[in-house]
Image (cartoon, rainbow, N blue to C red):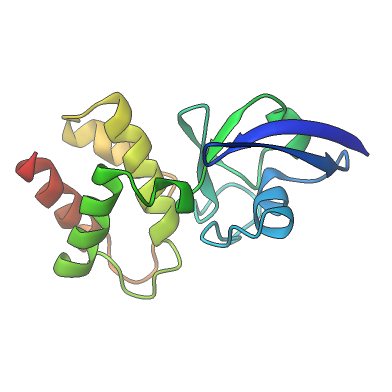
Length: 153
């Protein structure tokens, strides 16, 4: 066991972690932040995407110990982010969400992209979402929702 300090959704916290504990487990089990989902556990689906020091990462691939001193942002921490709020509204209005399992990861990935590139190219948008798998929407409603927000801003 080791103790790490990490900033999660704006709050500095300490946690006891084992050497093989994943960031995903730390977020869900220790901090009870359940918007982050476990899908594939091998970094293929993006359901577990969080922001780590401003970058979208698959939390199933990051060891909790690697997060010592890092800033982690989950979808819960983005609740007051105006861009995330606009994205959520557009996903509902435009059908970008169906079952909703992939939605937190897609929203976090998109928010991270827009923080770096407020006016992304289509290629940048597709690259940012490449690691997020959706089995329901066929992706076009997700892209329509995001593009709706981009056109507003």
